[in-house]
Amino acid sequence: MKLFHLEDEGPLRDIFKTTVNMFNNEVDLVQFERGDDAVTYIDSHLDEIKLFLLDIRVPGAIDGLDVARHIRDLGSTRPIVITSAYVKPDNQAIKALDLIWMPKPMH
Image (tube, rainbow, N blue to C red; front, side, top):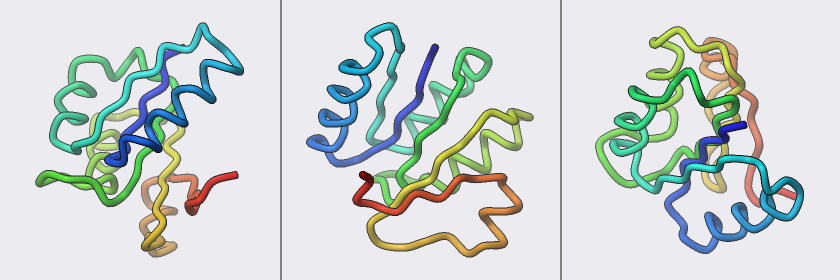
C-alpha cells in the first residue's frame, strides 16, 4: 500500500515514518515537505496512492488544501486526511473536498 505524506517539519516526518514502519513495514511511504513537489509526484503516481495525509501549512506556492483540491480535480476519491496545528479549514471546504480533519498534535 502506498501512503502519501506532506509535512514540512522534518522531525514530524521522521516520527510518522518510524510509527508507520513499526506497525506495518510493508507500507510504501512517500514523503514531501513542499506542496509543489507533492503535486508533481501525484500527477505521475495518483493511481498507486491509497491514502493522503496532508499538512495545510507547507512551503511553496501550493499549500496542503491546494494539493487536496488538485487530487480531487484529478478525479481521485481516495481518503485525504488534512492536518494543521494552526488553522482548521472551514467546514464547507472539508465537505466539498471530502476531507478528514485531524488537528495536530495527533495522538
